[in-house]
Length: 271
Image 1 (cartoon, helix red, strand yellow):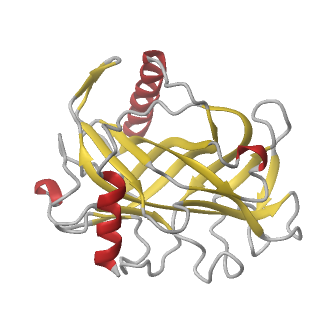
Image 2 (cartoon, helix red, strand yellow):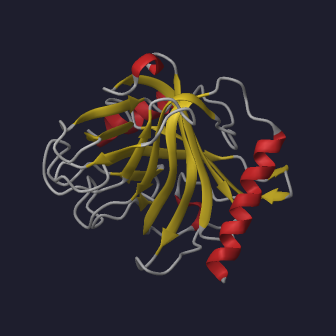
């Protein structure tokens, strides 16, 4: 099964051009706020809940898993906190998990298959720039939850494929920008976004142990074959947003703003 997944991924990614940075912009329409991590527990590759695995000679893998007992029950991860029916134009509605606690469940399953650093642009040169895509099969990004009240129905709120993903930043830090694009395929709150482009964007922070930031990615790191990094796993937290994407490509202004935000995060972490 694992070989089939890797072969399928190779077919999907063979036609994907350079992916980083993507400059994902989210426009009006459905929109979610996310702060994602895994609860301690087994993942498909049994790394005690850690989100990132270098996977030896194979593409690196990042997964924010479903709740331990599945999206219909069990303890909640409490990762998706708010929903806007029309981004910026409506009042946010709280999202609750299967256990009734504040925050719904976020699932994201990506493989990283290449790099295109260095990238010269914005205020400085990016020396980490990874290209990836969602694992083929079921939607690579799903949001589950109860909308508005702890007793509302627990249901799939958003589902999309991820045909391209990007992670970029500076090797000296533990925080990077992460974004992705794909087609929205379902979800009770997806509405007229179904069949259109959806995206996610935000910051990913690496930790090892869980309370210490980890700057482990070297310059020009290639996620296939380990890139000179011994096999390892890392905790990873994603703070960002999911919604309908604006079709037009982002501008250099967006890149400058993204890198400025990343630099600000690095300074905050150091202080």
